[in-house]
Amino acid sequence: MCSQALAAAAPLSPFEQLRYGREIIQIEAETLQQVAARLGTDFCQAVDRLHRCRGSVIVSGIGKAGLIGQKITATLASTGTRSHFLHPAEAMHGDLGRVHPDDIVLLLSQSGETEEVTRLLPWLHKIPVAILAVTGRRTNTLGRSAHVVLELGPVKEACALGLAPSTSTTAMLAIGDALALVASRMRDFRREDFARFHPGGSLGQQLSQVEDYMRPLEECRVASDAQTIRQVYIELSRPGRRSGAIMLVDAAERLSGIFTDSDLARLFESRRDQEFDRPIREVMTPRPRTVELGSRMTDAVAIMAERKISELPVVDGGGLPVGLIDITDIVSIIPEEAR
Image (cartoon, rainbow, N blue to C red; front, side, top):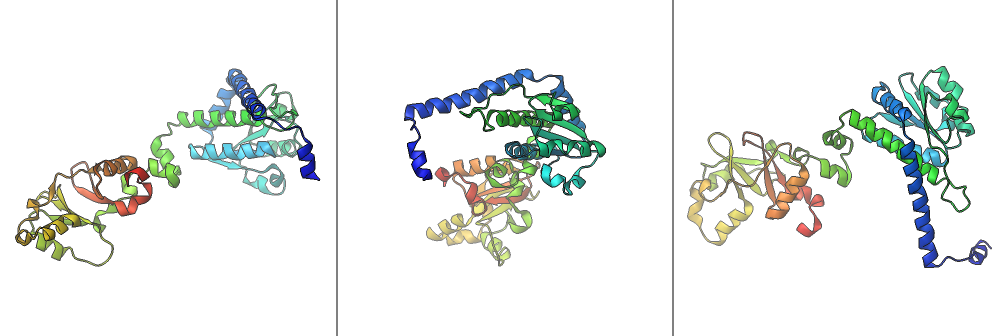
């Protein structure tokens, strides 16, 4: 019966689908322009409170506004502002205990009359805690109770019926992003800080440093470049995982070269047995490409992909080896086209 009703609805041609889709986006874009122009001293007060907050920012809303609130919570937390989401219904059943006077509560409600949200207001005032409101009008119940109001103004929902939260929630999200990112900038939040909060996934890999992936020196094979190849392999022979490269150092312990298992195989293939009892410095790759401690992992990956090498020594500012990046440990972040 339901499918018959859907089939009976007037179909939209591809042209009409595109026209309606573009109209929805344009309506929301125009509203965002109006919201941006409406920002004033209230926005500055809100950002200042976030910047000076000694506790956490507690974000709350219900329905679609609640979902937007969860995203704003995540953005705040990932950009240096401690933040938690509080479901307004659960708050009335014990979760208000999560709110401390040092916190700030950010409430989201387009109408400002949502029962689950307005019911919280007297209890928040009793804590007491500062309240920031993102709402349609400052004269509604939420607006009158908040210490700072960020007014969305008149909003036309993009829904054909003018009912489904769409433009209003887009505007809430934009204001939330603006609050979070301006506060983050005021804290001088940097790439290094962002990386600490995003250690996983491709984003974390892009922001990570070489020490996050390298094998530390105690797990690497390191030898003096004055030793013979035979001595090096006898002394460095040990069970367990090993890299395919040996880092070689001079008398001052600075990295002077690298000798790989591929180099060893070439000696065997060319029957140069006499080389095994000569100093390894004579057959090593001198002054190998390195990356300095603290460098971005993306830079290391780019070097390995460009040079088509499987091992990349990591050195400190004085040229002393501190670790080794082995391709077997980072194959998941090597660009597919470079493998």
